[in-house]
Image 1 (tube, rainbow, N blue to C red):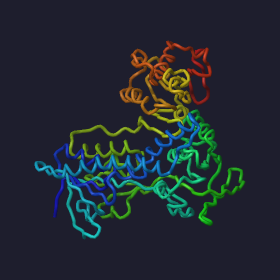
Image 2 (tube, rainbow, N blue to C red; image 1 turned 180 degrees about the horizontal axis):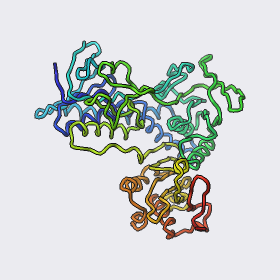
Image 3 (spheres, rainbow, N blue to C red; image 1 turned 120 degrees about the vertical axis):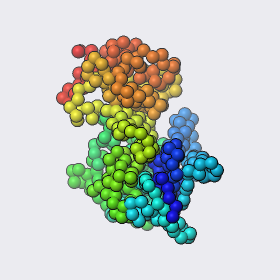
Length: 491
């Protein structure tokens, strides 16, 4: 029986990161993947959909500038597949060369389906190649997740699809309903509406999309979707959906009890994801699950001390960057010195919408819910030189700080061009519990989007070039609590 210091089950972002970190500690590691290296982080997930978003951004820019629609389904999928090939090739070559290293022979890879025999032994079943059993001192479970399905929605991945079925379309549909107005649903609504050949409908249970985000963020995205032709079914829920004559018929029930029927060519179901735990025989290892079916863990350690969980299979945030960090952290806990517990409070996130949205730390909505009084500065993109030069003035920066003299940064929301690149300096200051003075005195490059961040903090310090008392519609500086919003000029 082969023995390993660590066995990693799952070759997605979390598992791959865990395996590579174990090599740093000089450990003999086996990585098992039953399907495709890269997992949902590559295939039909984060990277694949972002490649389609990038394609759609090019299309809409051409549409707006010269009035020509260059969109094609073949072109979009070709670009997405090329992106996947480049990344997969990089990962597989890396793995192959690691396996061929003659000195260490630390890294091993097997394609097959893994299941527990007991808390240390794992059976690996290979397609058409039999099975065998290995022993591992430590184990990381990183089997990821898949799109959530419900019994009353007949998903066939051709007419009614999840994100896994997008590639089956064959052509851009003339109409598409997206069920679910969360991040993924809004991203696909953005992609298809940008292409300008698909009438998009979006079903939203509430009055506005992205209910977890600040109202000004959600409204900006919603207004742009509607300007791009998206019909948002607000205050509605899916009452019935079925396939008739190769088309989708769906019925909505509104909050007031009204029923309304629609017909479209395709439907995209985006109602969350579920962890991949079936077939692992976790009970034989003593690994417990939560009521929602996630692996129960504490700082990546499961109910069995030498078995850890990372990524979507656990109950944490389902993001590639979070999963990779968890995989590395789990290995560091196993083989390294004492490490600090993971902190999930200030994770940087990006939403590939129109416009792009990035966030870190606390938002106004969360501050109000927690009863925290904060100072807020907000600047419109139309006051930022680089945004004016790009003719991309739709958006804003918003920074929240503590309501005291220290004015330590609590959070930031960026909506607009280059939003994802703009938040990292603020994320670092939040991580290190620093105030805003450093950003105010730095010499930022000109013209750049991040100059807008500098103006935000200058407003809070009473040093801004443009005065919010004059440009009241473009620059705002105020204190905010659950009851009232007070302009700082009056304080």
